[in-house]
Length: 226
Image 1 (cartoon, rainbow, N blue to C red):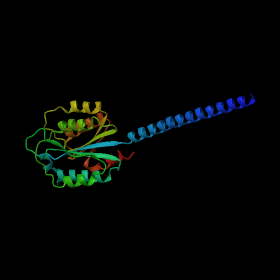
Image 2: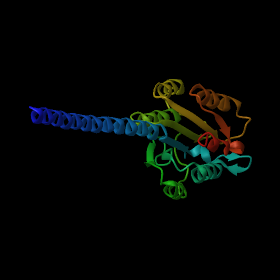
Image 3: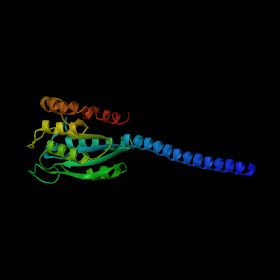
Image 4: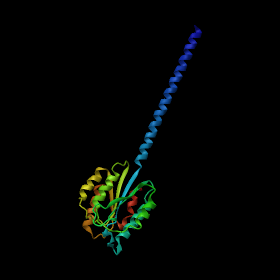
């Protein structure tokens, strides 16, 4: 009888140990999943996507205080591309560079990546201003490029601000806001162009972005370094 009692106790202890071990394993797996989930969230929140819209329309042959706007524009894009934080995924969209008179001449020249800085700089070297300025159309296309992306989303428009397209800019700004995209603008042009300046500034600020000129364009970089 005594031996039977001992055996029962031993069996009970073995079963108890088994269940406790199994429970600990399940708990550890659950804890591991929770930790990994939190890490994934943190990683996603750090992803930054920026599409640069670069004006290569015919009006960029004009001069800004004696210097061709296209030269100023290339300088801005080169400086920005070299100094932007490495975690930012950049894409380059260009309008007005391929066809004369085409109000849909806008194309994604360089897709999103965080290791494409040299490609962007090399690409713009030989680009020459040519056609129309479908700014609102290009903003809409950039918005669609960013639409399905998860992360912080930005558009940087580098332009002299003369839009001769057929799409109301106000409508596109609403689309940008609906997709949680922030628009920054670098205006390559003389400050006396008050009407153009006010329109570009209003567009940027409505989305939570900022308006810059050639003289303070380096301040754009600080908005991605905070």
